[in-house]
Image 1 (cartoon, one colour):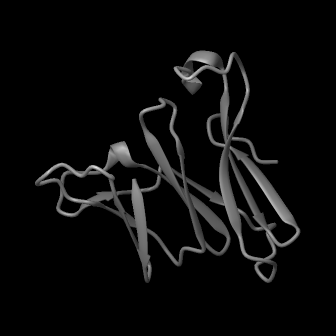
Image 2 (cartoon, rainbow, N blue to C red):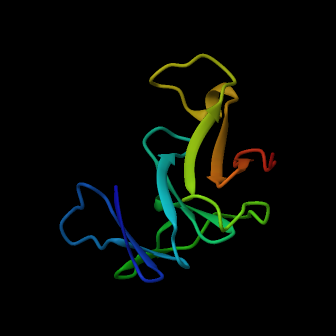
Length: 135
């Protein structure tokens, strides 16, 4: 997948877009950072966008059939503790291990939890997307 930001719109396109299929429009605010990460199944991808004080997570499999296709966030996490005057923001996905690490592993099968890690300035937030906790 590739993503491009223009104003308050974010457009996502699979790297091998089939003929006749539309790209996916993610409705968003001013995007400061974005990152792709694995969904619960290794063949699916999530997109996380960092805005001023929130992160939105999109599951590309849930895009509608319109042209362009649209997808709403599957998760929106408020991050009021991060200093907006700090250094450039950074977001990444991580996995909290719950079982054996193999290429065929999926988060569902081994009890692992999917994390979203956000840093800005001296602030750091870790959000467990699969268990719903914030550290």
